[in-house]
Amino acid sequence: MNVESLREYCLSKKNVTESFPFGDDTLVFKTDGKIFALANLEGDLTLNLKCDPALSLELRDRHTSVTAGYHMNKKHWNTILIDGTIPDKEILDWIDHSYSLVSARVTRK
Image (cartoon, rainbow, N blue to C red; front, top):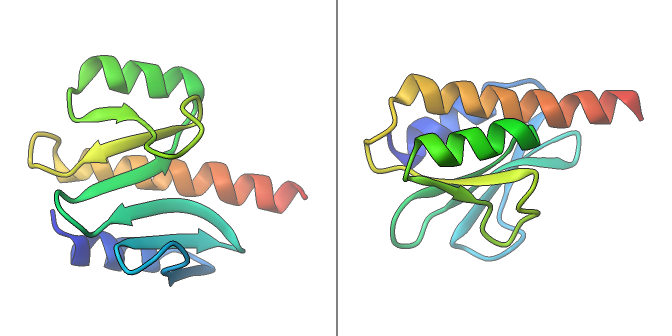
């Protein structure tokens, strides 16, 4: 998986925008103005995704390339190193999960 396939997948979702609010090295995806994914474009490709707290811990235990969210709330965010050790399908499922968590919260408000 590469940044372009991640970008295309995120942008295929409803009401998603992309921007660089934190500088040229961090691509941010939002739905209705709320962040659900951040891709680090400098150095190793990483992806920050929102996650259910219990699932966050489980994924960190199961995968060495999943860590607590870098510069994010460690309880609710994971950072995934995109290095080929996690199947693309699983990463896409995690993007879906993050998007669902954020879009559900926006809808409630």
